[in-house]
Image (cartoon, rainbow, N blue to C red):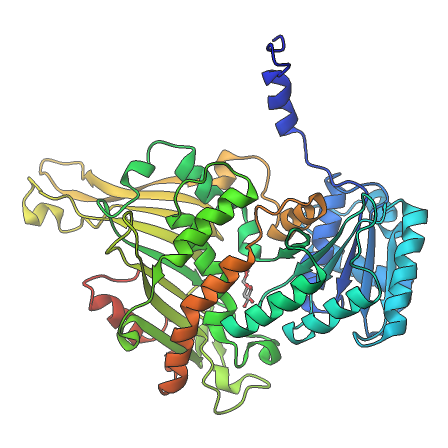
Length: 511
Ligand code: BG6
């Protein structure tokens, strides 16, 4: 194919887009490197990226924590974490190269000397590994430390971008615990970093199945014409976990399910499901549409009818007896923290007016599953006898986010035989069957995007604030009104959640 008159070469451009996106010279500094997230997700993701050839040869990793470690101890920790949790196979030569660039800086966040050591370590790595002065700072620390770390980075000149080099801040959730604290935090972060230097992690956006929501909606003609109030009856977004809070009492108690995952993951899923088509797939265009739809979300007028919170009691899970939330280590006996939350939302725009979006999440539920179910209205007229369609439910399109990744379409079909009996059947797309390559972990994708400076998959300040805006009145209502309803572990949450949908003549799916 020859170039067109303006010099464009469509074949070359098409091939270019398929080339792997490889990060340029750079390094990553992880604060809170001794924590769970770092060991289970961040370190393995760095290794997986290196293993896939997506990191530059001199990539450097600096751990910063209070622990009395030497560089070798840190490298050993990373090694063990990689062996235990990496997605891709362990290859000695990849490990050898990666470990060349590993350093550890010991200190606490108030320690000026430690930040000076960090600075000299970064300079040393610039020379030894050729990182080009490009570093991302990953704040994998409890939110109360964000301001201090960010201020220290400023004070020691670590946030300054000299010449062509870049500095970026990666901030883990929760970003605040309400709108006011999120705004305060935003002000502190933006005193030091410009908006395009800040990457707020919502790891759900890094999941392949979540990115596929936009492909499904906007790369096809099949779904978009019916993706609106004329055809959709309601939408259910479920994020169910079978685990309890494990050793996370310190983080979880007082935060609860709604702040932990509805404010971020579930509202992002809602935004992607409900937003209008962006003009392009660049970060600004995506953020503009997500912001618009989040701004149109309406909470129920009567919060006692349109929201439910619960707390797990003892019960059975996977054949084992498990304890209740109040018996978990480190939990206050009077704790009113929600481990289950269900919320009915509406979206005030032409596409969605009158269509409820039911969100629910919980720990210690029947099984681990995250899905978005778009449930359609019944056919306006049925030529079949009522008895012939008793087993016909509503058509649904279910985006299976995890663990059994794919999409299911449910519709009615004639049961083979002499009578006209119609029953639900389903048609499935499963990632495992359609694609040979396994999906990268969310953190692989997100860390790579930070190093590439690609902010498409990171929520902006406005999105975070709008999400708190939705949740704040609900949390305040819960604070004023009693305790969460108890539900036995291993069930699908409190009966009040079922009643909430029954009042609307609907029921939750049992995935
Ligand atoms: C985190 C929450 O953001 O997501 C955890 O803080 C939750 O409470 C986790 O367990 C679930 O993530 P995933 O990817 O396993 O669904």
